[in-house]
Amino acid sequence: MIVVVAGSSGLIGTALVARLRAEGHEVRRLVRRAPRNPDERTWDPDAGVLDPAVLAGSDAVVNLAGAGVGDKRLTPARKQVVLQSRTRTTGLIARTIAALDDPPRVLLQGSATGAYGYRGDTRVTEEEPYGTSYLAEVVRQWEAAAAPAVADPRVRVAFLRTGIVLAPSGGALGRLLPLIELGLGGPLGSGRQYWSWISLEDEVRAILHLLEAPVSGPVNLTAEPATELEIVRALAARAHRPAMLPVPGFALRIALGQFSEEILGSLRVVPAALTASGFAHAHPTPEAAAQYVLG
Image (cartoon, rainbow, N blue to C red):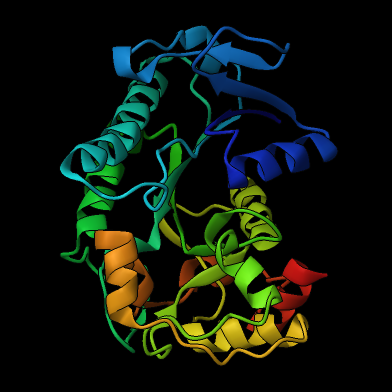
């Protein structure tokens, strides 16, 4: 296949591009600077510039572009960056696809489990409506920006509602793993809140699966949810370290501001559509993920 990837330099995008190439697919990477490699194509989402020829002749587009929600404190200005980095890229890609005479047949559009807000212990499937949290509103506008492609009967659009990605380096564990390996890891807040998580390996495998599987609409990219404490304990056990020292919720709120809601809020999202499509996780449990993350 010829696959166009936006957001190819992030944690998921980097791993995805490597896997696509390893499996023999041709990749076109969208970059916001002058091309440095033969597989790169320039675009400018802020200016609304994307040459239709970049998408023409491709089989699929995977859009993972967007500023990190937890990378910086969520000031009003940063919130605008987070939102616009998603809606502008998604809208530009969707409009360009819909205007093509022969568009790619698949758009896998990045999204997040934050769409549902915080639901406590309730098991949440793709049938649930949007929540009312900050991130839920971001996701609502993010997914809405894909409307031109969704309305095109020639294109299958799936929204990759990704959970917390567990990887050997970077991502959600980038700051937590060093503490765990020093024996300083422990529950964040009560530790009883559910985390909707997936290993990086399974995230990439799921995206490749969805390039072919006839699935449209929201798709929860998660494994079976676990509590934050279960995940931390699995990682600590694999590292042969204790997981005793709790981090109080008020300390997280001081350190992380509004983003602490994403750490302390409980969201139990299950991969109903992904499982129904025939996907099998390589790392279905926190223990399996810990072995993957920590070798």
